[in-house]
Length: 182
Image 1 (cartoon, rainbow, N blue to C red):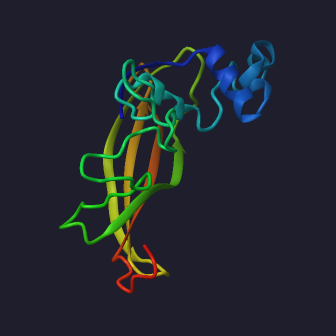
Image 2 (image 1 turned 180 degrees about the vertical axis):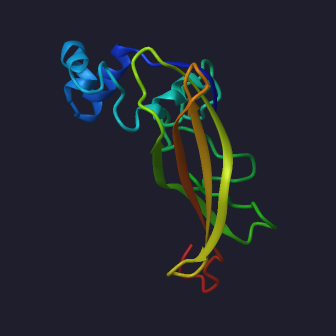
């Protein structure tokens, strides 16, 4: 994700806090927040994830003239890729060497490291880079492929405020050759 401009606004903080059910006055009440040790409205933990809506290429963001992820008759809202037939969402049949493997991916973990408080009035930028990758054998056979994506959020002064690390996992296994499964 690359976000060139993510304005942190009081109204956005209020709506986010309400959405996550955290009505701490430092997120929701200007007067109480000003009288507190933080001195004003601040953003709740995980708030920076909302920056995805400021990324025009974010894959879950609806795009004019295109089917939206989750808006169709299939669970994913997307049609099968050419030559795939009716596969399950998330399948990657045919990838990685001749179609003899089946795999799917999911979001496994999210971590946030806070370097500075995110305040109403800040304007953040976000840059993402790949992190570590590793593999592990699954309990049911097959390989689990893990990969990190590290996003750094900086304020208008160029100061690092939050580092968010997302871990994805893709499963890979050899299909059942007995004819009983798949």
